[in-house]
Image 1 (cartoon, rainbow, N blue to C red):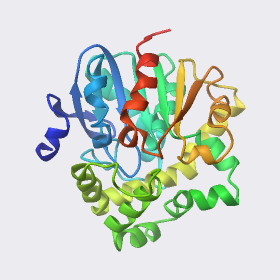
Image 2 (cartoon, one colour):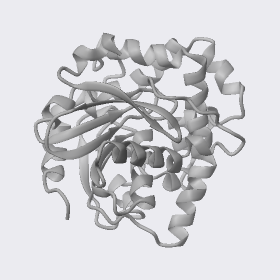
Image 3 (cartoon, rainbow, N blue to C red):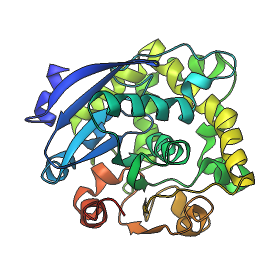
Image 4 (cartoon, rainbow, N blue to C red):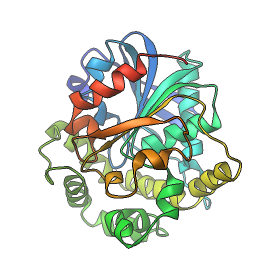
Length: 303
């Protein structure tokens, strides 16, 4: 962890024990608590460009999700529940409680945004405010999957295949897969937006068999139990009770389908949001533009 400390100057780093195993996190800043949740195929490192500015107004908690980065990688089980967004959200509640935060705001990207909105649905009293970056809900992704979307997000089905198929395919050259995938999701279709130290951390993780397996389990959960949880909430008309901000890249994945803002109204009727000039990785491709919108929203605190 010390090799990346210069990406988070002044931040402490430690582990918290949860039912999902030990969770690694960085903590820094002062003010209202804000939990930052990363996505695939990254780790907490993805927040390094926005963390210093956010830390001026917030106490930041920046963990690695279960199975990612330096956090524990639990066994997936036949139902993939340990990698469900419900289980990830519960682990994050444990983390925040252990640090003394009964309620807090969350900003999540990609898979972390899925854990974030699940946290809001399962633990409605916990969230002050929610920011989701470059996703639409899992329910909408699967129920509106067509030819164009399937080609765009081919990895959703590929990584969800039964083990060991995706582990073998990606594991043959994991660093190449990561580089190609991340470049293809940026606005400029290259890796110029990423700090080389961050890329080294992402490559190291996906090159570890247990981390790669965990990432596949994440997507297996997304295709099964996560979808079932979303479907149950839709059927029960259960929605987010906290103010929600949805941001997406103008050249990102959600922008190429139906309006992301309209999609979010299924779970967040009062959602607000807009596109940011970036690809999928808003916090690294366009940190200032992302902060310019997210920080005023977060500064409003509890409703």
